[in-house]
Amino acid sequence: MNIKQASDASGVPSRNIRYYEQEGLLCPSRNPENDYRIYTDRDVHTLKLIRALRMLDMPLEDIRAVLQGRFPWPLPPADRQNGCNSEPGNWRALFVFVPNCSKRMKRSLSWTWTPG
Image (cartoon, rainbow, N blue to C red; front, side):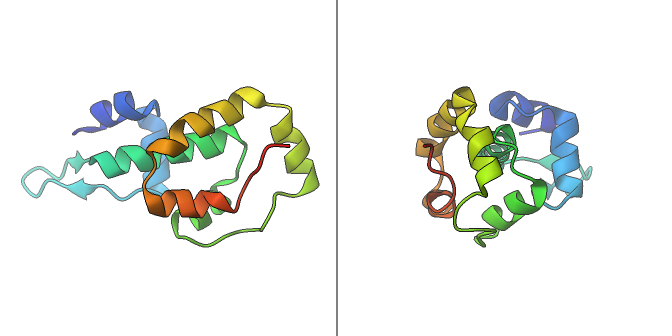
């Protein structure tokens, strides 16, 4: 799928998708004939995860660690817990997405945030 289709499927604007690529959070394949990006369903899942974590104000460096299977901290710092607990809509968005994640992504998320 092209960037517009990936944007529509993930809810992430095309501009943000390009930024996440520049930051190394997403690496779509390229069409060898025209060098256009080719997004897969896995890329769309990654974009949805990035979007959900950004909704929780997780910094890009921490999102990178989640995507790489590293854990930036066992529990969020108290200041982040308070901020996240005050945003129940953000938690709902994450929990709607998580059941559709791959097992690897679920394992990456399992350590992170537990709403209080």
